[in-house]
Amino acid sequence: MSDNIPAKPANSARIVVTLDYPESRLDNILLKTLREQNDNMGLKNLSRAGLKKLFSKGSILIKGQRAKPSSSLAKGTTYIDILGA
Image (tube, rainbow, N blue to C red; front, top):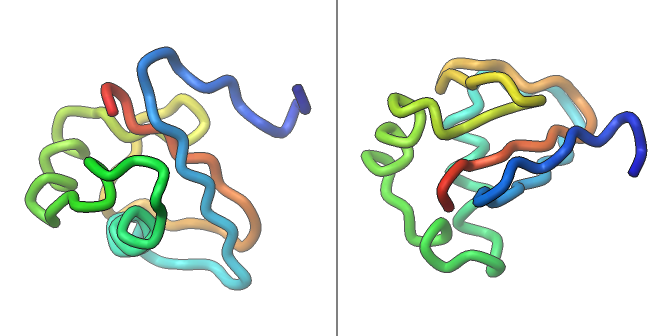
């Protein structure tokens, strides 16, 4: 495994987001990405309130660190793990 790709936590779903430009809010990009994917139908149909609950429980991680809805995303590839998904 490449050093650039963090280890995926057990019992989690990994979402890979690749951006051509930086984004100011993780929550908006993550919700859009979840709705466009077809690997996890539970996450595909997640509501905005459900996503907010995952953030408040600390279930959304970037590079193993708890992410906030207002976290910004840099241009390039970001690996987001959703615990318990």
